[in-house]
Image 1 (cartoon, rainbow, N blue to C red):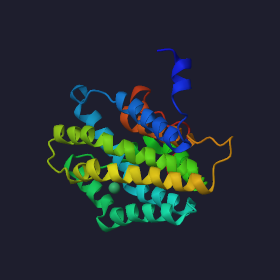
Image 2: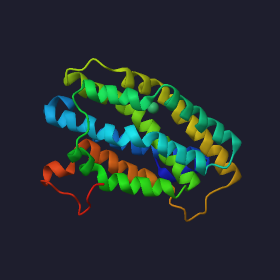
Image 3: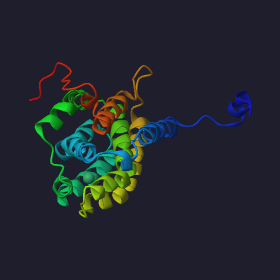
Length: 232
Ligand SMILES: [Fe+2]
């Protein structure tokens, strides 16, 4: 089909819809980059689970709290508080710790070192509390997590684990959470549209890099690379 014709016939989507499409595309790209789980060694499986745990266990609630601090509308605040309630009340960090423990994949010092630089970049981005880019980042994160759960549970199962509460819960509840964050995004854009020169996908790019490091572990290819940064 002629693209000019397509553009003339298709009404331009709202900013929120266009953002959601780009987030979906970024998630699709990440999912397509995942290695075949059946071709991974036990150490590679352990590493992915351990690095994922090292990032999510101590940071997810903190980053979502950053989103709470960054929003301006009551509607967006209510959506994020609802999400945080579930995280804290049901102790999702504990759920994740049990998942990693049962898969023999508790994070090590080397795992922390591997993710250190990319994790720091995301932390500093979140700390800037840039409302719209941060909401987009968290919607991307929730959407990715939900899609990633089947893959993560397969790795754990291949590690001999039957402890799947974390992946079962997040494969379902993050569908609603992701849509909630897009609703919050619409609310924020309606009252305070970002400046035209704002890089709306800065956090998505940084978080994608972190997730690629979780999955692909660049340090294993190039030896003990620390990117010149020492972990704390
Ligand atoms: Fe969670």
